[in-house]
Length: 262
Length: 147
Figure 1 (cartoon, chains in turn yellow, purple):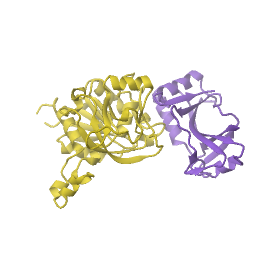
Figure 2 (cartoon, chains in turn brown, cyan):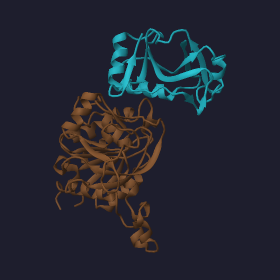
Figure 3 (cartoon, one colour):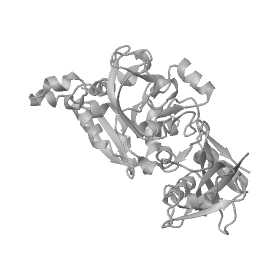
Figure 4 (spheres, rainbow over the protein chains, first blue to last red):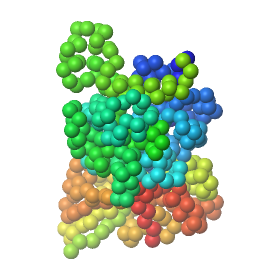
């Protein structure tokens, strides 16, 4: 039996199909669930909040969605220990919902993915490196220490911002899940000016991960910017093979399926 | 010698963002009959800024006459009953829409919110405070400014 994963779609979400495709590629039974169907969410094993611009980013990116009724069962599930992955706009929603870093009351954010330091929308290819011990992130079961994942950072509001004492807590207590790095894993300044060069935050239990760059947009060989794409040229199977950013979903699948009978 | 000139830009067409705020605040139990939003543009100017109001009115990024109303404020602080939301670590801009404005040294942008009751009066300060705390302001990177 494959684990069932809900991909929660808000008005303005735009990355649900590629997210669903990534889930299928790693053997998960993904399903789109629209914001108007919160009653459907009770039967899922895990949840993904994909990228986009929920509610047009009105008021603040992620703010309206975080208070949407469809988030009630997602929050309940997260608190019950189920896995919740937020990508880009999904990460912003998780921060506004207070699920990451998870150091304050629900829906009272203590950190934010705020407007980029440049003041502009940016779309750049990046690598991110696991910045905590693997055991801090059960949501990515089996991920190796210092794992480097390629992705596309594509956002206008991806700069981690928080008061100084909260940033210290994020670093000290292991909430800084991924940092920006080069392909060799050397930490580099965040392209959006994020504090701590943060690319992703994780909650205290390690079952909620909010990652700003899109691993699903560099999840197939033809999407890579390195030599692997050229090497696969002419070989349809190799060109269309899941690779690169799909690794993050493989670890997610391992985590989700760990609690599901085979 | 510099001074600050403040302009408020409001929509003359339905404000979907304000309506979304109204809906969300209602879900949070903050009662208001109407939510009013404005973009606040503040210009730190020197004496050579000339006819700034006309210049601002001609920049469509700020003011599109087909859908916006532009009004200069006398005060550079929020009006009673109003809250301004600003970025805590804001770096003032020096250009808008890629264009420098003669005599303008810095440009700051805020979002103004007012909550009105059935009779069109401002809601109680405690209700506005609750709206700010629960929704309108993320204190991780924003600050709420009142009179």
